[in-house]
Image 1 (tube, rainbow, N blue to C red):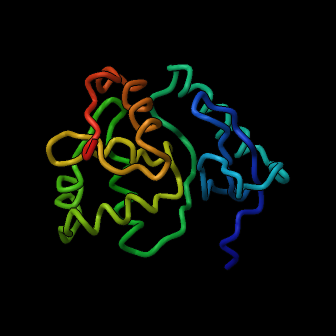
Image 2: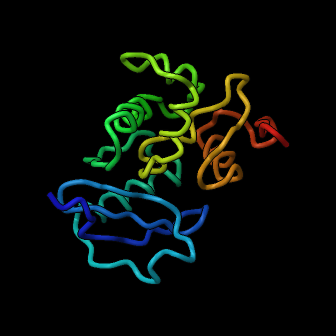
Length: 167
């Protein structure tokens, strides 16, 4: 089976341009574009256009839950963790430890943190909703400023109320 995305689309967001990739059947990756990203997105399909429209609605505050077929590629453990991310409701957070305890069998918070950090579907699988045990902001592969913005956007807390761990 070919795991490589067939289609890609650049999506403009308030936090920078994003690149969504997938097949005509499922979204496989979503992340912010970097200097290493392709200059232009490749061919597109209706599913990626639907993803872009849902992201636009999310960023405008009109959508709180995505309705898209997702097919992230990872290990069995990563996939189990990512499935748990999908269950964290809009405007809510949980700790890495809480997420670890939801797994069957339960796992360590550190192992869960590693899987969360490899989430290939940012925002769609809301890893930004995972916090430190004390409620502080901890790691986010796209930067803590983006995590802060996303949480404030979802009404978790005002930007000034969110504490960044280690700063």
